[in-house]
Image 1 (tube, rainbow, N blue to C red):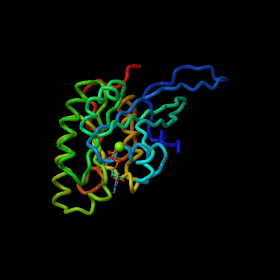
Image 2: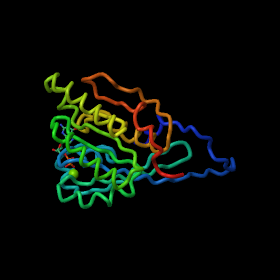
Image 3: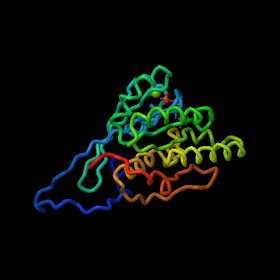
Length: 226
Ligand SMILES: Nc1nc2c(ncn2[C@@H]2O[C@H](COP(=O)(O)OP(=O)(O)O)[C@@H](O)[C@H]2O)c(=O)[nH]1
Ligand SMILES: [Mg+2]
């Protein structure tokens, strides 16, 4: 479960430590999940942390906060993942998760274009609260999307790319149900937060599960202070 740091490499030299003592640094990173109801926020969080995709289980679990540890070299990264809920009244609670987050993952459902339109408002609100958080734009339910009309797929993919450009956010299409790009979302977020080099190949072809990050999310100096 914990090999997900392998594709992330640090730029910077390790701090000098006595060679006979094993010191593990520990860093806690909060990631907020934002987006309309039913786009798949809770499913994604549960899948990433517990490797389970089960609708009934996810619903009965009733959590909106999970943690997962990932090790990169001598550092333990503790991801705190906060699922914001998508009901309209929940926008009032957005500050709670936005303010402490190093990255904000904006999720929309690839089968419901109106959920992409909603991202404008989610982004406006969340980014207004926390300009330093790294935004990541994620299209969910790729397993269903890939069976839809190719013209629709192309239009939505291009629209998603435009949103990603405007937000200066990496763009990732994922499927929690089919385990596509789930780990990558958090690898990309981590790499952008800590300015690490990512060796995961990008996916740019329309119709494929897009994974575009190298040209996005580099303009502003963001992330947590070190
Ligand atoms: N086919 C498919 N369904 C998904 C996927 N992710 C979530 N769902 C379903 O979408 C619905 C909403 O998911 P949920 O995680 O509760 O969304 P939330 O309201 O954003 O937290 C549930 O029925 C999930 O089983 C996916 O990758 N593929
Ligand atoms: Mg939920």
